[in-house]
Length: 150
Image (tube, rainbow, N blue to C red):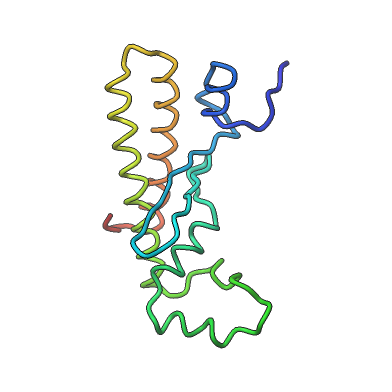
């Protein structure tokens, strides 16, 4: 039994020349840019879940002025932990819609990349695993938020 550590498929592809379609440590990273905001990354885990940090960032960035007023009433030192939970139903729907849209765009690019590299089995295996992870993430969101538009 050989262990390479907790590496993503991209890491094992680049460093060791292989990919696993069942890698329990695989994470897929998507760069997110929003006008007037600092760029950040959205991480999709093997089970299709999305990291809490990017959700918190989006909850803040997509909040209305009224929703942001809550921060002025928070005791100093409590930080942004309040963003670990939805601010409102409206805000959470916007956040999940943004996440689904971002992942859907990455999914489209992944499929296009697979079509362009169809003769490279290793790259196709990587992109296939990436595609499955993105599809699982979108499925999780649409299951939790039926009828969500993205």
